[in-house]
Length: 328
Ligand code: SF4
Image (cartoon, rainbow, N blue to C red; front, side, top):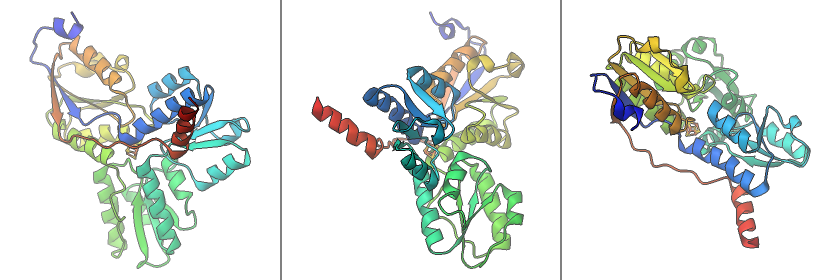
C-alpha cells in the first residue's frame, strides 16, 4: 500500500495544474543530449545548462554530459550542444574556430524570436527586447543585432528607452515572461511610443502562457501554491509570482519535495501544485506523495489546455543518427 492509499480522508486537497512540466522545447533539448550520448559516446559537452533544472542537469551529468560555461572549456574537435535558450551568432563562430562539432538544441520558438530580431534589424528598426537582464535567452537574442536592440527589463524599464525614429520601432520579448507584466510593459512603452509595433506573433511561448493560465484559474482557491522548478528557471519563478498576483495566499518554489517546509501547510486546506516547463513529472509525483503523507490525499487535476506540440531533433543530430543506422 502506498503512502497516499494509507492516508485517511481529511478534507484537505491538492489542485494539480495541467498543463505543467516539460514543454516541447525542453523535451527536445534533453532528448538531444541523451541521443548524442548514445550516438557519439561520453563525454558530450553542453554549453550552459541544457535547460534550467537542477535535477535534469544532474541526471545528464551522471550519463556523461559535461556542462561548461563557454566554448573555450571544450577540448578542440569535441562535440558541444548549445542549450534550449539559444546563443548569439558569435558563439557559433567560436565553436567553428575551435573545430567543435556543434549541435544546436535551441528551442524553435526561441529561434523564431531570433529570426524576428534579424528581420527587423535588417529593416533598420529599433528593437525593444522585453526580458530579464543577464538571462541566457536575452543575451542570445540581443546578440543577433546588438546595434539595434535595447533591453527593457519590466514596466519601469520602459521609461528609460530612447529610439532614433518613433515611427520605426518594434517590441519583441523573451519567451518565458509573465504575460500580464509584459502587457503592462508594452502599455507603458506605448504611452511614450504610440506607433510602437508588436511582434508578428506572440513571443511568449505557448508553454509559458498555458502554465500561467491554469495557475491563475486555481490560485484564488489555494492557501498555498507550490511550484516545482529551479530558481534560475524564468518560467518557474514567474509561476510563483502569477499565483500570488492571482490570489494565492502563499507561493513557494522548490526543486525537490524534501525542500517543502511543513510550516507552509499549517492551517492550509487547499494546496495548488504545478511545475515549470523544464521539470520532469517525477518530481511533481514526489511532491504529491509528500503532501499525501501529510493529509493532502485528495488530488483534483484542473486542466485548461491539452498540449500536443512536439519538435523534431536538431537536423545535424538526425543526419548522424541516420548515417549510423545505415551503417548498422
Ligand atoms: S518554455 Fe517555451 S520557449 Fe522555452 S523551451 Fe519551452 S517551448 Fe521553448
